[in-house]
Amino acid sequence: MHPATSREMAVGQTLALKVLKMAYNKADLERQALEAIKEHNLMFVTDVPAYLACSIKTFYNKELQELQSIKDALERNRVKVKNGLRAKWYKSENATVQIALYKLIGTEEEAHRLNGTRQDITTNGESLSNITITIQRAALPIISEDDIAEDIA
Image: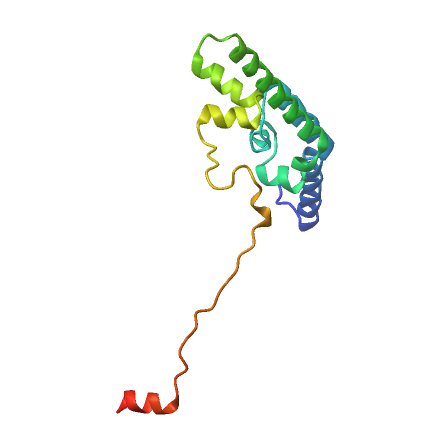
């Protein structure tokens, strides 16, 4: 075997770069991401790169996190899990779980009553957006230069 010439090395490097570019085709990575999201029930974009054949850096450099198809697939999984949890909570006999569900589906007033958090002591239900604040200056005695001179002496 003879050592490779510089031309042969350059051709090899060019081919290697083309192979790398082909391996990280954005459409292929998007398809892989969508399959991983569906198969592994992923809910967060930060989890997706772990299931792809590229690095995290490549995932973000290709701006896959911005693709609406990926956002929608992740959102569908989150909604599916939330609906499943709410259904389980609805059927539950556990009072704590029932209260948690009630806080989610109840009005804001009902949630505050369950929490015991909303206390309206000073406004009687009035909005605080129209408050007028008046600043009064205290009347200070006028000090003459003679008074200052006496204090120094």
